[in-house]
Amino acid sequence: MLKIALRIGLLGWCCLMLSSTASLAQVESSNGIKNFTVGQLTILTDLPIDQELESWPNLVDQAVASWCQKWSIDTKSAKSWNLTIHCIGDRALFQRAGLLEGVPAFEDGFQMADRVFLVDQPSTYYRRHLLLHELTHWIMYQAFGGGGSPWFMEGMAEVEGTHQLNNGVLTLAVIPNDPKEVPHWGRFKRLSDSITKNGVPKFKHIVFYGNDRQDRMDRYCWSWAGCVFLRNHPLYFPYLEKASAKPLDYSMRLSQQLESSLLDRWEWVERDWKLFVDEFDFGFQPKLNLLSMEQATQGLPSQTRIDGTMQVDTVQSWQLAKMFFKQGQRIQIDADGTYVVKVENQDYWESSAEGITYQYHRHLPMGKLIGGFVSTDIEKPLEVIPLGKQCQFTASTDGWLLLRINEPVGQRQDNSGQLSVRIRVGD
Ligand SMILES: [Zn+2]
Image (cartoon, rainbow, N blue to C red):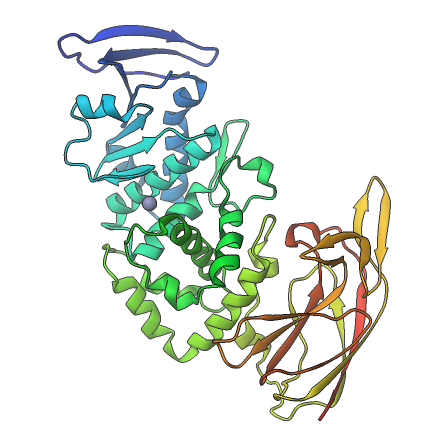
C-alpha cells in the first residue's frame, strides 16, 4: 500500500484520485504535470501514473537500503535526504513550468544535487535502468560528496542501473543472462559494435575518459565494463577500493591515484582486460570467468618447456598453458577427448576438439578448441587461433597461450568433460 502525502497545492492545482490494485494514490496536477510525494521522494511527471510509476517509491527504498548496506551508509541519514524525480514525457511542459531552469542540456537523464531528471524511454526496463543510474549519482553525491572520476562515476551508475526485478524484489548490479531480460538496454551490442569499429580500447584510455559528449554512450558502456572488470578482479580490486575511498569529488584524482598505485603492474592489467573483454557477454560470471595473468604466470620457468600436457576444462574461461613462448617458435597442438557442450531436452550434444558444425559461434564451430595468444607487447590485440584436434602455428611475438572451448560464455555451464591437450614447441 502506498502512503502518499499531499503537497500544499499552488493556486490552480487540482487533485486527482488514482486507484490501482496496489494502492490508492492522491496526486496533484498543474499545467499537465502531476506531483506526488512519498516519504523522502517526490515525483513530478506528465506521464500517466501507472503501476510502474506507483512502484517507484518502493524501488527507491529498496535501492537506498541496498546501497546503505554495501557502502556502509548510515540508514538514518539516507532516509533524511530528499529527492525529486522529474519523469519527462514532453520536455516543453517542464520548461514552461520552469522546472528545467538552470539545468544544463541533457539527453536522457541528469542528476543535480537532490533533483533527478529522466526522459521517458522505449521500454519500462530501460527507463528504470536510467532511474537507477541517476539515483546512483544522487546517493554518491549525498554520501561521498561526489561520484569520482568520469569513468568511475558513469561506470558505477551503469553497474547499479543494470538490475533485475522479480516479483517486486529489486536486485542491483547484475549481469543479464539474456537480452530478453533487458529490453532496449543494448550494452553488449554497443560494446561489440565499438570493437568492430575501433578495436578494444586500452584500459588506461577508459580510466582517463573525460566528460565530452562525443560518443557518450560508447564511453558509458566501456566505463561499465571497466568497473565490472576491476571491481571483480582477484588481484587489483583493492587498488580500486583504495582509490575510490570517500570523500570523492568529480575530478581526475581517483584515476590518477589508481594509475600511480598500479604503475608497476599496469601491463598485467591491460593483458587481463583484453581477456576479460573477449569473454564479457550475457551470462558472464566474474568469479568464474576473470583471470589474473600476473597470478597465473607466477613461477613459470623462464626457459620454455619443450613438451607439456594440460587438461582443458570445458566450463571454464581462458586457461593458461604453463609455458612462455618466444617469437618465431613453432607450436604443435594435439588435442584428445570428447565432452558435452549442450544439454537440451535430455539430449547431450557431444563434441571433440573440432567442435560441432551444427552450431557456430563467432564463425567457428561450437565446442572447437581455440587458443588465445597474449603478447608481452600490450599494444598487440588478443590473437584468437582456431586449434581443433591438431594444429601448428608460429608465435608471432613473445607471449603466452591460453586455451578454451569456443562457446558463448553464458552457455558453458551445462558442459561436462575434459580435453587433454599436448603442446610441443620447436624452433
Ligand atoms: Zn550518468
